[in-house]
Image (cartoon, rainbow, N blue to C red; front, side):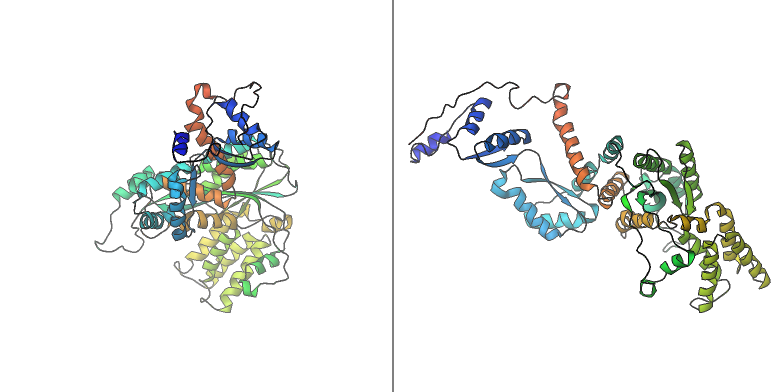
Length: 490
């Protein structure tokens, strides 16, 4: 029909030729020496074969290959620019383009703004729930991606380096139906004292705890207690001559609301074992003193027969020390700083037991009341309870990290910056998907994951529909030799 229309329109003979046929015809066209350019719309496999064959005669090629082209929108995107680009990408050439944008994967922080901007640009409302469902679908291969990575051989790394595991928890406000059973029961029975406002200590909503984990490798960094204390000073008053701290390598951070803490900790141990199967590195676990997490970490390490050095985060210890200092001195005075810093220095020198005994003795000598000395006793109890994990003199000499800054940063980026928006109450599946996508981005794995995810999507939506999951070849396995059948048109 196209040829007939061209003839009726007066197109000279030979300017447009319509050739029909199958694979053999296409092969002949690509191989013919008189053709100077080939344009193909088809699958990626076909495009590779056309490009390879066309290279023999230096033909130009233009390929529009298969697949769906998604827009991926993170929460720091320029939404106004995105909306215009998405409209052009979807409607270019009246939508008859293999690279036309047909899907949007939008991070939850951009949902409302993206949907509103698309509606303004296109005049078509995009359901918010549909956009949220795309995020859940985009994150569905998260576990399979890392499981596949653990099946690959681990890359070689410096055997003397330190392998660090650290775990923390962060609460997320959830809808009641997505709270854990115990929290849901407590929320159902909780009653507020006042009708119109919350009393001191009351919470408007209930939270579900996300377990946040980090695994990374870092070079040893030997320091003295004095050098570490100087690193805690504000940036404008630090010693600029201090040696730069080594950066974490191959850092992976992630968080989960769906999984229990023991599952996340088990995953962290498996990730670490993949990095160091021969246990040539020195394994360090940095904790914040949460009894359950500490018990789960030590039990999991024992199950895997992995020797680990457990270190209590010094920043949490410092918080207890400063609270105790307020029992003896006023806020903002040189005396309170001197009291706190001298006790911290002694703790870093491995003298936590002496510090605990000394502050109790000082509170007794000064005859502090029970209320006044409560923070002192809390600090002393904390130091005595976790004395096994407070050998900071040995940790610093070995070059181990003694603070959990990596996982604290992960809690902030993965959870707090996104999940703690005013008034937000999350559904479980949506929140879990957002955490996964943010974790991939923070770990530097998003590009590799997206390639993996696209392959899995093709398997689910295409290859699985064929018998035994085998997609028939695009060309015959043994193509017959075909002589060119075209004639030169003068």
